[in-house]
Image (cartoon, rainbow over all chains, first blue to last red; front, side):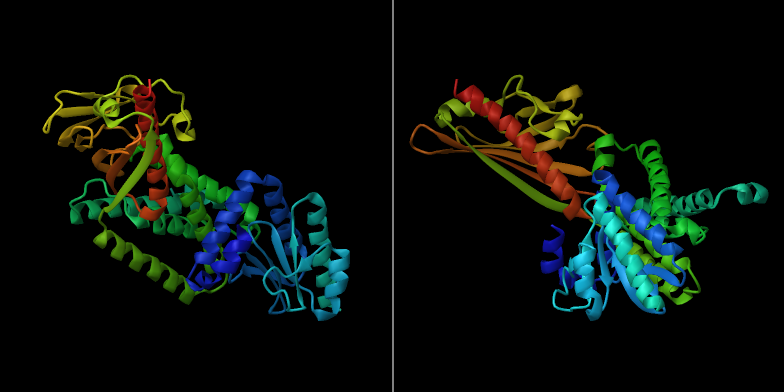
Length: 139
Length: 307
């Protein structure tokens, strides 16, 4: 469903607040039907908030965006999909070590990866991935 | 008073503050929509969209950064939702099925508002705040001044293995429907159709569509073409909290088509006006309910006719 919406209704994201409303529905769906996903979303957010210099904002396509030094580190949608900017240099490493895939929309960007948190293991990969990317920014 | 206010947690301050404005906006929208429209009980689009967004935004006004994470925002949204539920039951006299239908929409808009509120109240976003509140106000004013009901038509067909002459008497009136429910909303308490009675089998005759709990729709036959067409206007709707003020059933029809092979195509049609908005959302539910009422009655007619 999410993939279909992103592929076919992407143009609607230009309408003010519509993407945020859709993300709210996804978050509500996670809360009602997949409480574990909702918990992972909250825990990832809590972990991010502990990282010094990272600020949070609304992502333009709905979701929570993580920023560092005025640049986007990544964002998380209400269905526990984490999109992270890893850079071209680290993409293959991240895909091999953190069970993530090419970005669900920007498949050929070479710099973004996506991680679906469907089970506890994915959540741990998500935290590890964000910590890795954060450390790269700190270097 | 001020001391009591200061002693409240930031969550409760936000909840009280936001719901005060929310309730005022709701009362105003209901009152103006009623004044400006011929349709009684109109519930405008803003009531289910702009008002929850506004409540969501205002409810996070007092929260600190630490209190604004998804987990806490969700709790704040649920707190606001409970207040809205109490208001809807106590003042608007809504039934629980209506509340079930409207809940996903309200919670999603509350969440949207809360997320937006965190952004608007963090830092000096005065311009953004002004443009968001200005836009919400514009939508709200335009909406309550232009509201009206929207008409819909729902039609279903069923093949009955009997000729029209056998089907027709069961269409005009039928006795107790005993079949178990096949629809989840009936299972949780939405009244099921149980019988249809008629006073006179002619144009102008009175017909009654009886539902559970003694609820009934009073109808008047306007077209009576034996073995072909039975059309009736709904002249009185029941004062049920799940129906009143939201949907206006106007007309019903059963059409019979002889298939020439001993079978009949039975078509059931309903015409109704929706008085709740966004109509596309509520019509998903109204259409589903109407189809299931049609099918329950038509399957019963089929069973009686095929005996």
